Length: 494
Length: 112
Image 1 (cartoon, rainbow over the protein chains, first blue to last red):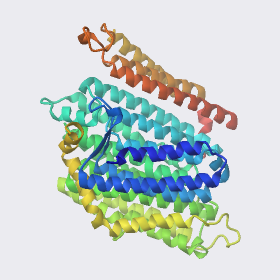
Image 2 (tube, rainbow over the protein chains, first blue to last red; image 1 turned 90 degrees about the vertical axis):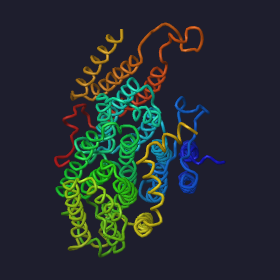
Image 3 (cartoon, chains in turn brown, purple; image 1 turned 180 degrees about the vertical axis):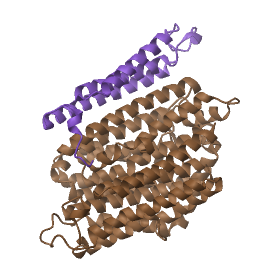
């Protein structure tokens, strides 16, 4: 039997290593990266179907049985996120071909890109908390390189702060792992879950550790008080890198919270999950305030990344079937649509030559396709049926009302409306309105940029229409989240 | 001994935090390095320090110290070594480009 779990990590790793040796041969690197990402996509599709038919997949590294060895576990939640990652990187790669520039391509851009993908996929698939830290470092180190890649002034300035905040959060991660090991005596996630579930008396220290992990993953995932670093650093690198970060990096933090708060820290949900829910609500509100307040299109977009983090975590905090399903649908939708919007805004800035709304206008006159794609993307982001955001939001609202969090549901709807306002403003002022530039004065072309964007928009539409097809998979993922015993038994007992 | 180590870790963490909160780039880099050292010492003392034997199954099997935190710490040291190296180069490059190592002057534009 082929083990698709390990190949999911090996394909991008091997592609990255091969391209380290051919930095000067740009065309060859592009070919290899596209071929590798397509093979990765096929592999992950097979993985998802294998999980659906045969149950949770695992790979014991070095043949050491859990809880002693490190284990990779592919359950449906990981499977779906891995599949979405593989889907999203292809358009971003194609977009890079025509926008990132030969200079950067010759400086190991594609290698680092694939190392980052390896780290992200590893973090999704690992079944061991310390191993998750290691994969976090793999993709963080790659992201440090990518964010400063090209060394423009703005990149240098912002990446220093980005690196600093992430080194600190990694140090906190190690402290959290140390505490957890001292208290529970294991780091295998299934084993942790088993031991914590079998505790007979309350353990207040575990609640402290749970909140510590919320801070650690919240720093990566940008939840309310900890998102301050995100807007400046995600706008600093070129569009393709920003899209990669916006689509993947915050989602790893969200996934980690998802995983730890559904399998490990379930001893005192009345406290920990309430904190999570309140923070999620505040994240939505403060994110959307930022999105409405800014006049710089890239800033408007990155604040919308923060809003989405709030939506998904709210679903996690409800601990209901509908809430979990909504969170899964929404996180998949958000990975696709945020990548699309980053690329669209990138194309808009390329054409308009400015980031400021006041200085642009009438771009739709010469770029109708770009304008209408943007409008569709905005509708999908807000969740107008039948586009992809709709089903996720409906389920999230359903989950929220089931547990009686009416005020968070209300805040969520207000936030959605304001998201629509903030994005439609870009459409009305940037694309519509009086033309500022004639077609000759434009600062760049959309040549080669529209195709990857249309791929992502098509995916989003497909996800909206094909929600019914995806439903059994989401259901499988939710089952495991609702009954952690399934995960624990699959890892430890077989 | 564990108490002493924990206090040492606490002192290192506070020195690290203090240095990170200063304005100079180099001090911040050293601060993260010291902060991480504090974390490592804490991780090491988590499972108890020397109790008498090497972690091999045998006659003294009951007396050995749990080796896992040490293995974790080793991994973490390697990672932090790479990070510090990268961070130093980054701060040097920032200093060369902007001609200053003062974080106040690296704030970015007014509206960011």
